[in-house]
Length: 137
Image (cartoon, rainbow, N blue to C red; front, side, top):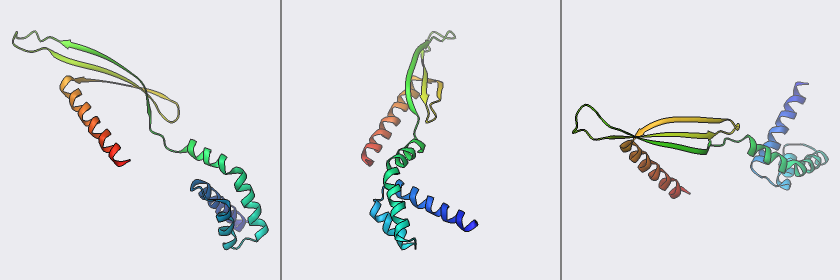
């Protein structure tokens, strides 16, 4: 009984790995035969693999890690005037509200405030990251 469970687990691993790495059916057939399965059994497994390969691959895509996507951005700009001395400059505060959708289709809202200087630094850093990512691809 334990040997049968091990054989089924190994066969499941072989088939899922073959689908994940887009192995063609003839290569899978040869590999299974090299492991010692009879030709008739290997051909039956190969036929089933051909029929279910696309659905397996789509299931892997659905279960793979996805980065959160940005749905909406809301912002508000506040100018704060200092009342302590007339010499002080006004301070600008940017309020951002990001609606992010993660891979489980849950929406999450992130609220934060930035000064104008910090916003400039954020934009600069994001621009540099975008340039770096484009150079890698």
